[in-house]
Image (tube, rainbow, N blue to C red; front, side):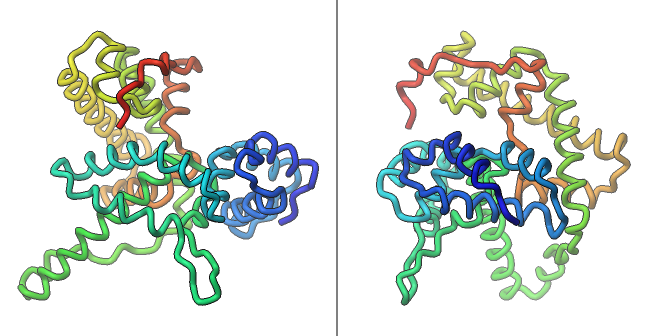
Length: 298
């Protein structure tokens, strides 16, 4: 798939790729790889290709390219920005802190280990810019956490033959339905978010989309930190129930298909982004806060 050089130069500029010293050719290669993976063998005309490329998280893609290539400044920026978010995602998976070691272990794979030829094999090569870098990292971490739990269950099954029957059957490949499932999830989330009270949407935007801490979110809303935590948990439950109800009643999906919908989002969220959903849910007016109130990010 060939990208016109003029379009490549424009996207390279929009991505601020020069900040990380990402060459135009390198960035265009990443754009082409993203398009090839997404189109899945279909032929796109120039307009379709451009529409797809401009929808990408271009700045995140440029940063990922630089990190994959071992740029020290890019890597330092990445760790500074993403480590608190990864730890927050890890704590959401395991409140005892048990998932933080998985978050830490990601850095070795993200940085990439040289083979005998010295070639870097960075996990960033699987990031294609369809979702934000933060969303992608959360999905990778969640998948590794699930894989670890499954591995532990397999070990237990080896010690207890009867436990083997409790393991889930291997999931069937339903790749042809992936795009449809992701769109159904997006539609269901848009509906669920749109039905939330404005204050609940603002709380979600502060904590998840803009990565404020519980304390900072509480100061923005005049709520105690514990209240913010309880309200976020309640809102998450409300959204999950609304999404499942939409998939089951309106989309007519079975329980197995609904479970697969959620698995598809975990494996690759595509262009699904919470910030965009909250913008849609608020009638196109994205909630913003004063970043100067973010002094205790850690």
